[in-house]
Length: 433
Image 1 (cartoon, rainbow, N blue to C red):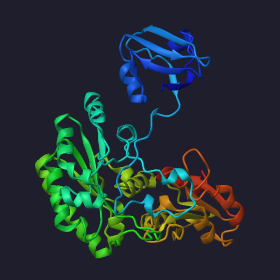
Image 2 (image 1 turned 30 degrees about the vertical axis):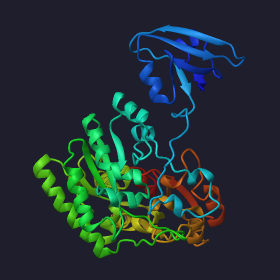
Image 3 (image 1 turned 180 degrees about the vertical axis):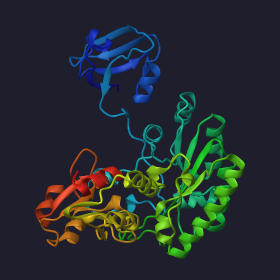
Image 4 (image 1 turned 90 degrees about the horizontal axis):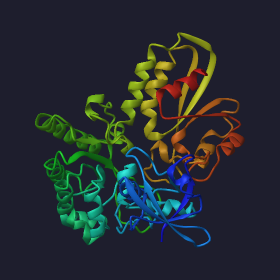
């Protein structure tokens, strides 16, 4: 099959050998190149032979001698050249199954690809791995990997994932442990299903696999208003969220005494739902699950504390509004409260209800343009309104519902500003620095 060369680095070995954009790389040393991992792994030898197909069909055999630190210089489009590994599960809580209709087709793709797990930290279930995949993971030592466990009891995990193959989780994790692969795991917690005693069992068994299992992230099930005929599930209330927090904190104490590391962490959503103060930085160790919404609030608050001493005592009259999801409001209100102590400055947080997804979706990252437009109306005409960059599709100015930032500006007549996820970016925009 081969992979098309997108570009060639200037003054590279590939350019010197006459390889150009549009050529097809068929093999390296006779081996197929199915992804960027194959390419990097196979091309490390000092002497390699590339089989290249030119656009006119001519086949080239290119022999290369290289120094250990010298790159070949080929650039490809993407990191997976064969088919993306798709999910073979039908999880009870699958968020993709709860999406509204008529969104972009790419949003309905369920990836479960171990290569994306290693390269980008995507969580995978291990249920679609072939023996060839296993051999590649262990021979290339693709570590760490990020694994969605959800439950360690075989029959319960098979029920949660609606896949008999999911029963093999204990054997799969042990195989990775024996291969020296480090793991970051997650549990999507569903009240009445895999919490309580089942959660205790899961934490105990995963904790026993340390140091292979480096972390266990506990995140609440996300439920939209588009579940249709899907199984009935319930969100966490404040009392249940507090129970989860207390359980995890007790396990953290045990693990810290035993291993010197907390290992198990709960998502910020639990603390916000329970109305309990976000724990200090020591709780999160190295923030290994921050992309899972675990520790984001603490990082933001600590960053703000770090720049608080440099805040001015007074500014020229300025009025600023911050867009956030419902669950993000309590944390941003802390920052806004301190900023409002500055003479001449008024900062208000605008919590936007997510009507697009409905249900219990309250996180900021899933806000859509239509909901922001609805919330703003023309009440903020001429006002400075800050929108977090996390709402935008990567590399674009579009939100999840394909509403453009300019559409929000046009409808609301507000002065829309975009900030990244840091406290520094937020404060600079608020102070108009």
